[in-house]
Length: 170
Image (spheres, helix red, strand yellow):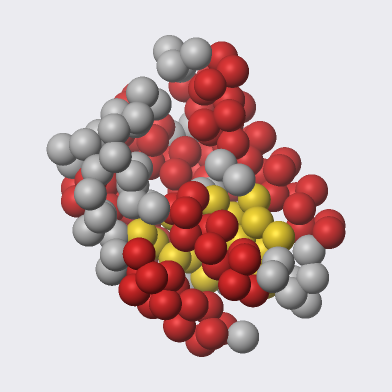
């Protein structure tokens, strides 16, 4: 049975790197972040309707990968990211995103802690409040009772910590 693992958390916490490294370690598929591709193609100005399109695109990409997956599927971000993004930027979360967050769960969420240096990027918006954003992610996961582990550390230490958490569910 396919186990889905979401690598989630605030901006610039190493989600993409970690997702790719985990997929390589376990020799399995991974789902890339759709938001980056969407914003690079449509420009950095966006509205709430764009965030919904991004959430739908991310889930579609994940479902396609799941059809080809075997044991593990690592997902670079998830609907939780669009939920927090909507709430922080627009003050509200669209009901479709909220429903997806509540019903589309993962076998494990790897919540990336902001203990690595911020890397500037034209699409990133929150260099000063990553800790505050981390707390929002953690609170949402706790409220839903979803299984998660906080991933900390730099480089290979971060990867090793994540691998240890994945091993717990295998």
